Length: 295
Image (tube, rainbow, N blue to C red; front, side, top):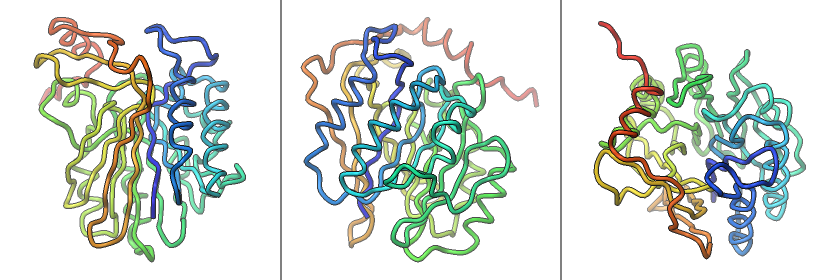
């Protein structure tokens, strides 16, 4: 099972450059063009922040660009929501988020309610997408209703195991922004997947590649398509640079899962998109981070 993993396209409602001067649609198209020579893609997973401001036009652009790419391999596409996404617009264009090669909704089961969580299957591999979006917030949370549903889904194993996809990573480095803006209920997710057939957890959000384990399950965080975060900066600061990236996830075999990162050949790669000093980083965390539990 070879999965192309994309995340954080941040496409705008038009093809105009965003406020940082980056053409998000152009970055997506460049990344897909660079990947055209790949072989045997069985599925495409896009883990959230598809649209930068939740515009229907942006979801349409992503669906058409990624869908055209996926049809080359007759591969289904699995989308999740991210903190920049808007559920109603997402559902209007992408339905459950589980689209077949012909663009039709192929979800085998969906979580009742507004959250966009669903179950699909590809050649005996179960794909479960979760909705970690907390409207108006940067951090993510799944909540007990979604976690209870996930436990029910995982109660019966799939023939070749489960791929779990969501936007907010349940792991992080000792970086202030990652600690503040990751998945708040990662421990509860760990409890839900412990001892199940989940083979890998795929996430995005941090705009950089990162790997680790959750309850013994490999976790892969793919870098962003629109830009990437450069951790060569001083601790407590943040720098984003140009350069679209994506990942290949290969399941099965003696060494699986294996992860490989692609970087598009962008002539402006590594140019600074924005940079936050320590004071500004603290301000962002104070403004958008979770409210501490008074207990």
